[in-house]
Structure formats: structure tokens, C-alpha cells
Image 1 (cartoon, rainbow, N blue to C red):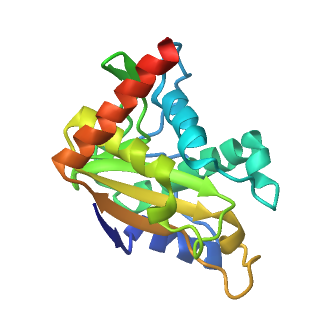
Image 2 (image 1 turned 180 degrees about the vertical axis):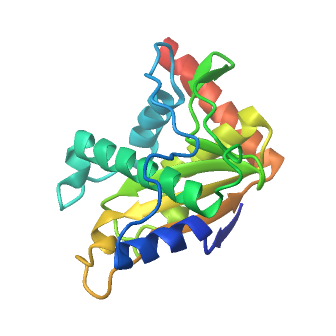
Length: 208
């Protein structure tokens, strides 16, 4: 696995907009889809159970992780904001950022946030109460396994994570506010295959 923190044009643009006041066309949302979740065995179901069993995640002292609806709402807002940001920095390429919707691989339903067709690779957008300093992307087992699964299913080997650290953005951990982090992570085919094999095995265990 290779990990690089990158400067992203959309995030730089949005950070400037926060400081100066938003302008542009807020109705334009690249790659946006409001499709509802279907039935079946979803990748998220498998990974949530695996994460609980393997990593025994602790609850946040801020209480944020105890309120899934609040995190979901912030994550949805972050998707809207980024989608608008892409429409402003890539105005002539609306086809660049694509939302594929749901699809199945080996009986598992997958829904990647976006695909960047020009980079190319998977895009995942995350909102968290965790500190950016204590919880960089390398500490996020669930997100990394999720990205690897999407890459394996779609034939990519890299994922770009747009991470909104809510408390850091507001400067509530002390110090100056920290803009959203953008990480590019790539994997070998062996890493992708081992991750998918683990997911398939746990899917079988859940079915049983």
C-alpha cells in the first residue's frame, strides 16, 4: 500500500470560498444521485461486522460516533459541497466525476461514492469526529478495506479519500482550523485480492 497526502483543486477552492463567501452555481452537483439503497447483502454490512470483530472500535468521547444519523447527515452535506466544488473547478468536464450507483460483485452490493474517469480511480468522501492528527487515513481500517473492495470490483488500483474532520475544521481540538484532508492510496493486485477473499469468507459466515 502506498499513501500520499495531496493538494486537491476542489478542496483548495472550497477552503477559499469558506473564507470569502460562496459564489458560483450551487445547483450544479457533479456526479450526484439520490438513489435509494436496495435490499441484499451490502459491502457495508460485511465490513461493519468485520470491523467490530477485528478492531473493536471505541466510542468517541464527543459522542459523535454514538449518533449515526448526525454523521450520515454531515457526510451527505460533505458530498453536496464537494460535488458543487467539482462543478466549479472542472466546469467543462461534467462527465469526469461519475456516480455509478449500486452494482453487484459475487452477490455483494457495492456503492462507491464516485469514480474519477480522468485520474482514474475511486473517490470516497468521509466525515468524521476523529482528529486528523490522531486518525490519519492509515488508521482507518474500514475505509481502506472499503476502497480496496471497490477497486477490486471495478478494475482500479487507487482510491482518493476526501476526509472532513469536523472538529478540526472548526478548530475545536486547539490550534488553527485544519482544512479537509485528501489522501491518495494505491494497492497491489495481491492486496486487493486478499481483501476481497476476506470479504467473501465473512459474507459466507454471515449467511450461515
